[in-house]
Length: 393
Image 1 (cartoon, rainbow, N blue to C red):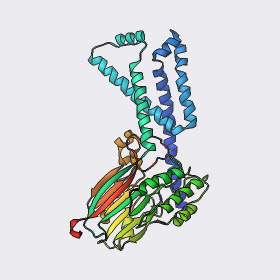
Image 2 (tube, helix red, strand yellow; image 1 turned 45 degrees about the vertical axis):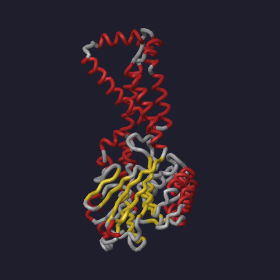
Image 3 (tube, helix red, strand yellow; image 1 turned 135 degrees about the vertical axis):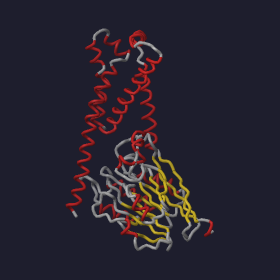
Image 4 (cartoon, rainbow, N blue to C red; image 1 turned 120 degrees about the vertical axis):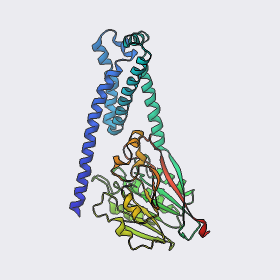
């Protein structure tokens, strides 16, 4: 088992090595491109006059600022740099096309810009980036409620079942333990019957103090039909510097009255099954068909699966509802354009869909991991209201 787990960790480390290598190349290319663009600003021209070498030196100043931020926050600075470089290049391409359509020569435009000392494309790009990333920071650091209304012909033993789903809190990413407790108060106000935590509750950067405070918030949380937890790919930690273990986490969750499901099934109210799957990264994960093959299909079956990557088998299993997280809703607008394949899933990146008789919901989560912006989605918790069809009312 340890060998298989080490192999999985090795694969993940290899993937991240490739990602960080790509980020390094992207950062260098973006810095060089932006350096050439900043030379076009009128203020740089005023400083340098006709001296090209001084213009190049003056344009290095904003690059040095970027380099300082790269040292402080590599991932988010690269995100900003690459975005800025790509959109700047697109803006200049569009401007060139417009000039050709208006039949103005590049010489005429350059002369006008030089005379007025205005680099319109650069100004527009900088304004756009400021608005774009400010909005992205806000959407990431504020949490909304997202509601879903579903119906079933199965007998739930109650007219309405309200499920609160919390996922990808990554405690200490955008909030600490106290922040998590505040969010749980907001969720408590919706009066759910059941709470499900679909993975990545904590992370490598979570401190033991904040983990304990978050578990205390779960202990204070009231859910008549129970509180359920499954592992995500970050909960056990990838590195060795965290000051608590997975066993510590499980002990505090258990003390909080949270049921931990690892390819296990819990029967609720004699009418509803909650099936909690191990994370996809776990080499010992069982197939969903094997887990629920002996369950009574007349009862409502809810599957908790951190990564939305097993839709075909889960739909074939006869499950009624599958709740997932992991993708952070795509996080960035550009990532959303690529969709589920980027995450190696056969499911979806965000939202709701139905396959056969199975409803799948993927939440963007209430926090982030490393990227501190959400431009393709927003942070959220989900409230799923499940009602019995009229036949039972």
